[in-house]
Length: 230
Image (cartoon, rainbow, N blue to C red):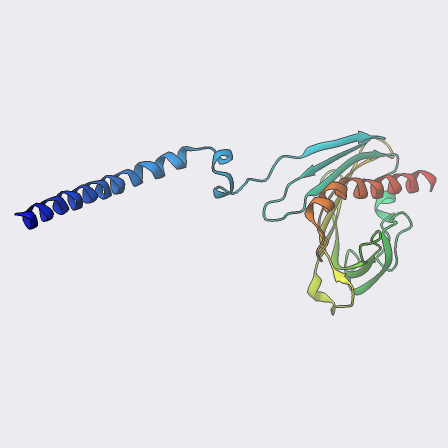
């Protein structure tokens, strides 16, 4: 009788466990449906973050500076918009032909053409002077000038091609920069400069993101001054 009672208790326990397991299995679809209805902020890293809108960081000296997070990258992009008292062609000429560093780009330590493809396209190599204690970087890029058919705008694009030149002792960075130069009334134009850079090495994204809009804005300010003085 004791044996029978023991198996009876075990049977009831097993049945209860099975009932609980069946209930849990039935609840799984409902739980999944509830999770899918939760906002991304609640799920945290489960739902990938969508690219953000441009966030205005400053509006000084007529230069509107913004940053944006980039999906899949820990580094932010920067954008600068400024109106310049110079025509489209004069602004474009300030970027030079790639054979040497331009006067206004203070971070450029060395620049040369690796391959001239056409009058409006070349593959270039540049050495970037980084502030101490960060070591200098180098950059291999394809530069293309696209003259828009309508409106007279010109777009200069420089896209990294890190494998187009043998490695050096320097850390090779990767960057994409776009300069859209649009004509305004008279000899004036609007420059929209957008850049996203991965500096390579072991630099923290927090340190880079804190400075990216400041350093690139400095370049725009130097370009504007160069055009005014010239």
